[in-house]
Image (tube, rainbow over all chains, first blue to last red; front, side, top):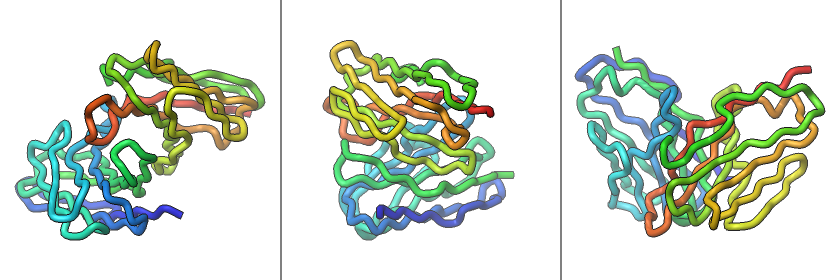
Length: 112
Length: 110
C-alpha cells in the first residue's frame, strides 16, 4: 500500500527560526508535493517536484524553499519562520502529475 | 477556493439517509479527485475521475467536464462517513498538482 510519512508530526517554532519538514515516500512515485492547509483556505500548493534534484514553485511559494535530494525524499524549509506560517502541512506523492494523490498524515506547525 | 467551489459548505445527515455534494469548476478541469479528511486529520483518496462515473460501495461520483462540475453521492450514510470532503481538479495544461475546493463538512448522527 502507498506510504508517505512526514516528520515531525508536530512542532513549535520561534519567529525567525529555521524549520525543516521532511517527507519520505515508498511508492516509487516521481511526483511529490507540499501543501498547506489553513482554516477557510482548503489546501494550497507550495512547492512540487517531478524528479530528484529539481523543485518547482506552486501557488504560494513565498517564504518557503524545497529540496528533493532523492526520489524518496522531499523537504520543505522555512528559513525564517513567521507567525503567518502557522498551519498544517501535508506532503503527497503521485505517479504522474494527474494521477491519484497519496497524502502523508500532516505536520502541524505553530510559530510563536 | 474560487476556482473550485464546493457546496454545501456543511451538511448534517441522519444515519441511513442519502445526500449529494457538488463541485463547480471555473477552470478547465481535466481530471477530478475526491478526498475525505477524517476527524483525525488524515486525507484519504476516494475517487480519481476522468469524465464519467465511478462507484465504490455506498459512494458514487460523477465528473462532467463539459458542464464543469462533479458530484459525490453518499448512500445509506454511516457514522464513519463523518469528516470533510474535498474535491480537487487537475487543470488543463497545468501539471503542477491539484487545485482544491474549501471542502464540505459532513456530520452523520444516529
